[in-house]
Length: 106
Image 1 (cartoon, rainbow, N blue to C red):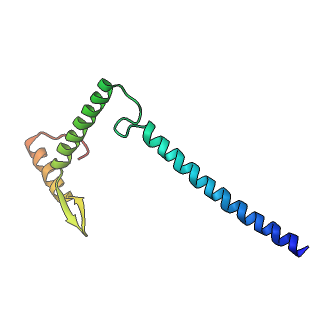
Image 2: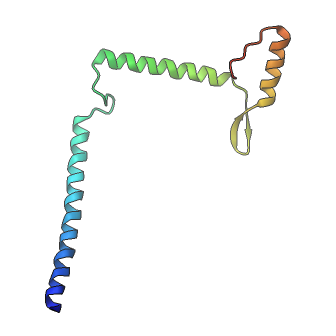
Image 3: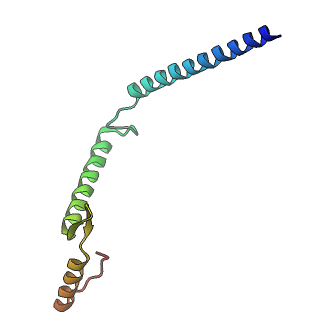
């Protein structure tokens, strides 16, 4: 009885090792297939024109975002960059004095 229990435990141990090894091998095989099938620059398979248009739109959006962020007054507090509320209030007061009040959330 003890001998059969030891053999059973040995088979279970070997089986779990084998299953782990097969999972690892299959994952490596799948990853290598993904690398060959999917283009990193074009993961959704767009045509050349569509991909170029998408890249141009993303570049324009990033440029616009950089312009907007550059207009915000920023100070460094506690090692982090934060919006300078005092400078924003001062700008709003100046705009209110000029009569060109525009509440755009910034």
